[in-house]
Amino acid sequence: MPTTTLSIILPARNEAATVGAVVAALRGRFPTAEIVVVDDGSADDTGALARAAGAHVIRHPVSLGNGAAIKTGARGARGDVLAFMDADGQHDPEDVVRLIQKLDEGYDLVVGARSGSTQASRVRWFGNAIYNRLAGWIVGHPVADLTSGLRVARAAKFREFLHLLPNGFSYPTTSTMCFFRAGYGVAYVPIEARQRADKASSHIRIVRDGARFLLIIFRIGTLYSPLKLFTPVALALFLGGLGYSAWTLATAGRFTNFGALMFVTSLLVFFMGLISEQVTQLLYAQRSSARD
Image (cartoon, rainbow, N blue to C red; front, side, top):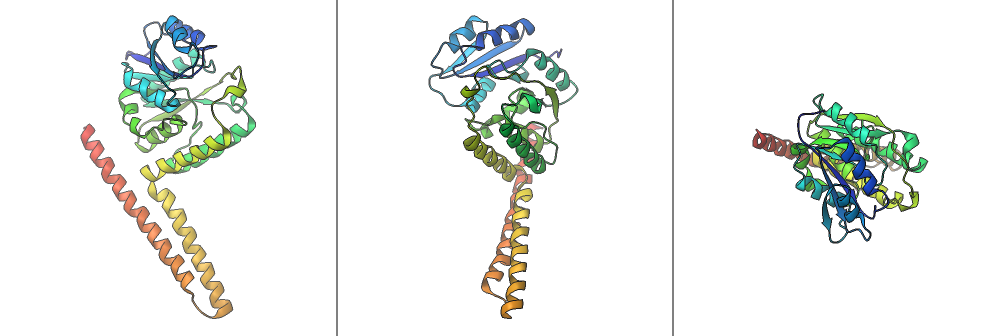
């Protein structure tokens, strides 16, 4: 076990059926840890049951979203290491131990990577696999599980990105990509997540939140690695202009304004990406100097 202090943060909304047992299990396994349950505007007894089981409860008077609950918990926690897990009973407290042991090897963020058999559905698993590949391409590192809610991070480094985390879903996506692009050590530990007792009560809607995940990936990509996104667009425009110009020259014997527009647009998009990359590097240099 680490010598640093540990805070375990559980965002919870209408989890009265499970939160008491989850907190009790954590209290039994981590008797000296701070357990923070952020009651995100629950309409049931989630907060009272968590408090009775031994957790420090912070309540949102109205539901602000999963990400907002995570930010509230991270700001209020006192530990040097922050562990995040769901309050619905999906995660095993013993897995937190394994993640902390991995963190002690020198990493800054350790994520519990779920196996395909423990994810909610094949559609969800397939969608997550696509997001993992896309995010991995942007950050330049393999991403085993982009959306896992079980993770352990060093508190000071996690708080650097609080202003970037969305109030809704998905804070795991944003935090994972931020740690990678900041050059912090990220590791994955395989876990087996339990199924929710009521699958229909899952707060994630596949189509709507899938679009949000993509938007988050591209937003973090443009913030930390602009050329990874701008260059393919510029190349596609250039190749499109080249193909269109070749076709008009072969069929009409002339070079059209539209072909010229595509060439010029491709150059503009590339130079926008190049400038964005330079701005990103300058911002990182300033942040590194401030930390030092």
